[in-house]
Structures are given as structure tokens and as C-alpha cells.
Length: 260
Image (cartoon, rainbow, N blue to C red; front, side, top):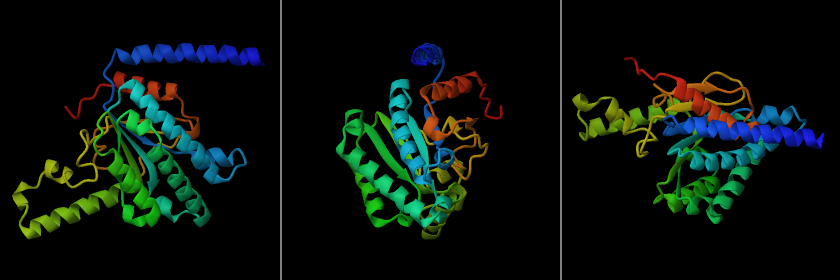
């Protein structure tokens, strides 16, 4: 049994190295967005409480950040908590918020972000979150605002329709106040009012969703207009580096015409 495991591990490592060499020959996506789906199902299939799935999922997020550094990705956006998720069971939300705070404290006091110059940005309706969690998120943003090696965006209390609604409201206020003329409104102008406005690359080249579901579920609706969509039949806690590299390889094999 143990020898069989070692043999499989050896094959995995060989395949991982081959994938890495293969994708090095192509153009890597500059911005990857990930819908981290399947934490609860992964946990329940193992007879665990759903929030334990989120704990394993949080550990996976840290691994993926390291992989993105190794693969030269510039921007990665994680869909961590939707506005719809805020309607879940009270106990699950309490455990989820506790996990968020624990992990944020770890990152504030650890060296992953500072050593690798990783900037954290939160996109979403932070006012819907508990005060202590919101304060921690803002402290993490402030502590990393000068970094530019990797941009990590956490979509928390996020909804794509809410983002566009907020952008429309702010734009309308600027039109009423005279800051913006009606004839100056175009797609580029609207993009300036989105949560992602200050990112070096707003639009993800590729969106990955785990768990086998094949929809984007109100995620980056404006920004994903020309994103390549890749759906993987693996729960988020089981997501591997080879899954990420296979997704990149699939992206590289597609011909991106942008309607031309």
C-alpha cells in the first residue's frame, strides 16, 4: 500500500513538472478569478459540520496564493463570500466570520504578504459585515497598500449586480452634481466606478469554478464579459496545483477573438 502511494506520488510529481514546463511556453493569464465552490458539500460527504469545509477551504486559498506567485500570475480574485451567502444559517455564519478573523490575524502577523509584497484588496459591501471583521479587513488593506508584486482581491459580501448598482448610483450622483457630463459616459467611464477600478488589470482573463457547477453566480458580471470560463469537477478543498496548471493550459489552447 505504502509503495503504491509512493509510486502514485512520483507520477504526480512528473506530471506536475511536465505541466509546468508546458505552460511556460505559452502566455499565462495575467488575472485569474476563482469561485471557490464546494466547501460545504466536501464536509458533509465526510460527515463533518459545514464550517469545517470552510476551514479546509481557507487553507487551500493560502496554497493557491503561493502557486500564483510561482507561476507569475499578476492578479488573482477569490470569491470568498457572496451577498446571498449572508442569508445562511446563523451558526454557520458565526463560524465563518470567526474563521475569517483568525486567518486575517494570521496574515497581519505573518510574513507571507510582506515577504512577497502581496497587496490585499477587498471588494464587496463591507458595511454588511460585523464591525470587528470589517476593521480587520481594512487593516490588512492598509498594511499592504504599497505592495505590487501580486494583487489578491477578496470578494466578501460581494454581488455583481450590487456592484453595478452601486456604480450606477455613484455615476448618477456625479452627473447630478455636474462632475460628469452625460455625453462623457461610456464603458471606460463606468469601469472607473466599479469596485475593481484601481486594479492594474480589472478584467479576469480566466474564471475558474470548482465543484462541478457551471455558472458564474453573480460574480464579476461586468468584468467577465470576455473571460474564459473553466469549470472543474473537484471540490475547492481538493483543488491541486495540477488543476490550476491544467486550467491555464486549457486557457492557452483557446483562441481569444473578442468578437472579431
